[in-house]
Length: 610
Image (cartoon, rainbow, N blue to C red; front, side, top):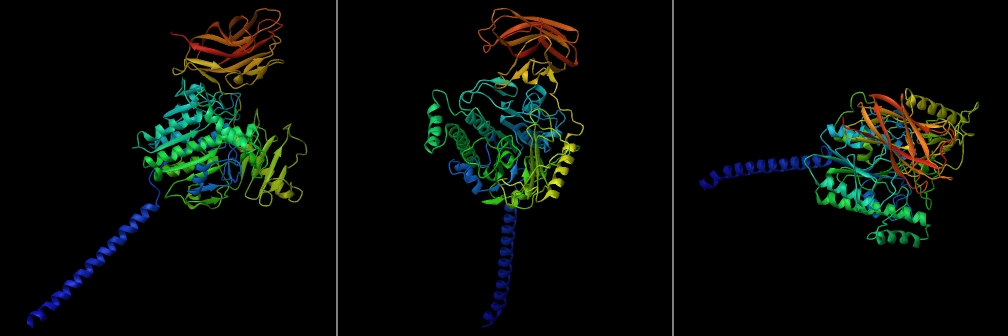
């Protein structure tokens, strides 16, 4: 009995200790689970960023937008796993959008103002998001279309990208085995279809060094014209299958080609997502899919007005889908007004880096909108304007907030004494911009027009919009091509003909009173060999002569006939001694009667050994 009485306190003590132990263990387990849950909800530190941009794909060219003809299952799945922004805006054309994306600034602030004629060059003093992320420890690469500068000091591998494989201009001519592409400034030959080639390069980059986070910009050149799928012997059946599928749906050939190109992009999206999952990077990578401007297809337009090059919704609204498993909600949609300029500050916030000192942004971070799957727009207004030759606030422009939008499309683009305020649309009631309500809300139209002028004056202040001086004498680019699109033409008769960048020409050499000149920035004094590429045929058969001048130096170059105007040959014109600094190279016909039948394709300057 005594032993039983003695054991009772011991048992009580044992059970008290056991209870304390269990409570402590349970409490610790709860804390551990809470910590793990909290960590799961917090963004992964320094996530990878995979930015995918199509070229000329409209808002309506996806299943996500309700297109009943096109098939984009990978993008549809991406939207189901992420957030779709239904009112994301780019610029009306490509180079301005890319400038805004790279800098977070309205493109007119950056010195860029056009898509060619030398106006598609991002100012040397601009800071790119690639430079910021690279300095923060990111691996950076661009695969595809750059279109922000083709000459040495403007090339992407010198603007923050560790690696670049793609093309400088707005488009290329060959999509199978493309030959207008480079790797870090060096021309290369390729084998395969262009969309696949760019994707494969991106996959290789993603798979490599995974000790650092990466920023991969995959900038497809599809579905931009020429509307080509596989055309080589081994690949053509695959391209034909896609075209035939859409022809069978009753689409015209042009639309079938465009849709086939978009579906080819979608097939490569599937490849990318598979690689991310296989590499264990799925939950560590923010993926964004978008396009650079409004669409060019016409079979289905989701009720929107206009297209590429237009200030209406169809010209600026583009697809924008984001995906980041575990960090971004699935299947959400938001109609918050956002734009391509918002990506720069968003990526900075993702990477945990500050906006560089001295960089004044127009964009606002939309990371919270991504994480919440919705919310209010960070902008009171969005602004758009573009002119083929020089910024013009009376030609093609728009301004809008969440409800009202004011648009102007004046073919002449001239200021009038009594300027109309523009066409006012109530986007809430009329998203297709079919009814001008400026008569009903004149004060709104006036307020928006005044605000647009204020903005235009601000973004163009202090800018001089002309082709950038072409760098000559850079050690990384000893041979420089002066293309016709960069020439400034003086006098009557001489004209520029565009046929795809590498094939454009200066035509109409009717007299020696007309001339073309290029602005040069000679980085190193020295002797340079001058070579001309041209096509020349005339009747009767005569020999024409061109005269080139730089300062007080002059060269006369006699041109042998070629097979036809469209068969180009090269000839050496001679050598020039160029001094360091800004120079002007001028070319004209030597004879008063000009040179009938001449098409000048380009001028080459080659640095000679000292």
